Length: 350
Image (tube, rainbow, N blue to C red):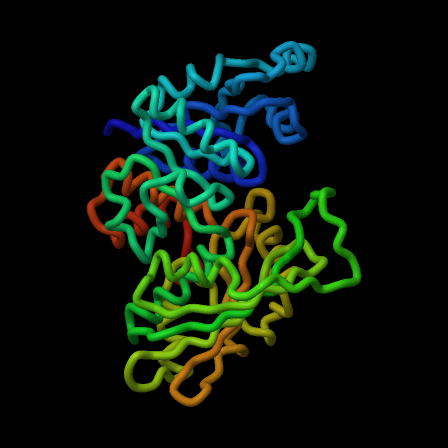
């Protein structure tokens, strides 16, 4: 079987996890990663013998403007330039800081290489705004795809599951948003909650992916780091969504982990701790969490709450995007199924 050759631009919070995710795909080959400086992530990789998931070698390439002497001083091996990397791949996963992806796209276009961009880029960087479950067909054969943000990715999983089974008319969301990733120092919100102007971009983005659903939302920044929590009020087009029917729908979804307070899942930090106890690399969890206790009926509508593990949640959908762009599978069910199998997603449901 010929493997799809994949490169990654940016080895930060998302790039590290993309590298690990690709390394686990049996039909893909991680050719290398590209970055500009010997960051702590790169130094840790070097200390680990340039070995990542499954003890695979991660070759490092330098983007334009990088100071190779800084890498040489630390003994970090460099395989070449980012352009060398791009020449040797079928598709790039761009997880560079927001705004850099548009510049990188020029390099991808120069060499006729497809690319998938993360949610921090402007929508115009790509041909398709993509989600593996909600609009897989739109990404088939596309050259440039862009993922939704972490919140929107997880939100769409749950909304799409209900929509496919019951048919939704509208959703209203409230996002309780973590202010920064663990280890970040660039934001100083403490002892305060900060409001964003409504509607939140997640509601707008959901309508871009799922234009048949009316969505609106409010976002509140909170001084925590381990995950976001979103409440959703979903209205069916016809009839009523019962609590039991909604729970059965959610429990069938491989990328939704239904939990309860009684089990000890008291909040966002519970998921992070549980992922670490499972032995997951970096304490990551690909699934969103959904509290059984928070699924309630409101007339014909259904209300529920989900937890978004922001550092890892977009990884499966990014790999789905590779499958769509390179037409590894022709339908979303087969593609997401392959991604789930290689990432071992949903094993707790079997």
